[in-house]
Image 1 (cartoon, one colour):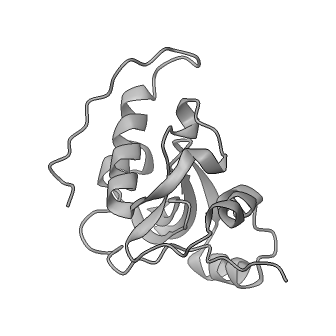
Image 2 (cartoon, rainbow, N blue to C red):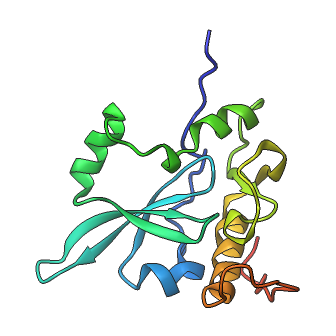
Length: 166
């Protein structure tokens, strides 16, 4: 029998405060978080265009990249319900199955020790459970500091604002 895993992180405080504060440089001012995956990635909505339609985006916090997931929340919900046409990298399901020996505790997600966008690998040994707030905030700060570096640039240190952390 195949092991079932929860693709969404067990969080109840996702809408409190500004979960995307450290990512505003990438997601913009109108982005509003909706879902957090167990792997620490975010689905958010952003109002766009003259009609201010809400588009759904996927934010890969490990890679520091975002992509359009759906043209509307309604279409997105239908896609997730059936999982029809859902790209594999959104949930990293194979890796999630490997690392989820025990369920995540409330408020946690799996976070890479070294962000894949900075050379870390999508392997079991690179991930551990962490507070989702710490993961999302730190990943956003690190990616913002590195966004203009050419690929392969050696990175010696980061500066992190930890005052917001619990």
